[in-house]
Image (cartoon, rainbow, N blue to C red; front, side, top):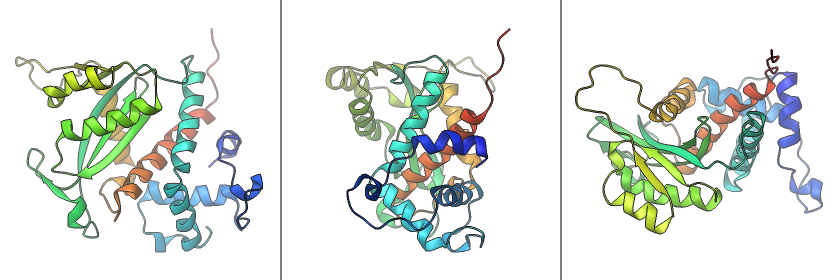
Length: 263
């Protein structure tokens, strides 16, 4: 991280329990060095044991990653960054609309058969990432399943999680894979309007579809972080945490940019 990024990030970090008088052993390494180590791993796709020597020991970095994953601290940190960006753009911290889509990726050999499947449509043997983003393309919620899990099945669980966290959410755009009973389920159970953005039959070649390009751009960003180009995580919880860490890279850099001067 640059000094400008650290100045923004430092104020948004969750406070460790030992600093709040809740017990626990004080941490031996600076948070900036630990965050740089995790961001380096996610961005460059290295193994944990291949951590460069100028970072803290890999096992201490992984222990930090595991603790933040198990206690949902990475999600808390991510949500604070997202709220700061939305406020900087003149939006409310809580979104009212979003876009949902999924992405199938190949899985490494370490991924077990309990969380691995075959996506016949994409012809991919691996996992599937289901994500909901706001209208700025910032992540609201993610769920990783086997690749053979249907979009509508996963969307019922994911949208329930997202609406429980974001109470003002009222509209979700989706593609044709989310049609059917899911539309009625969202309206009746979640008070959520699921609007389907379809591609017309007379379209040829590449066409930018309204609203759907937002989540497609988000999925393209995930593929730019090499750790997410293929699923290397044994647990789906770790795979979801890697997505949140990837988004913190994007958001911290965006917050560190100087604001353009208005005319």
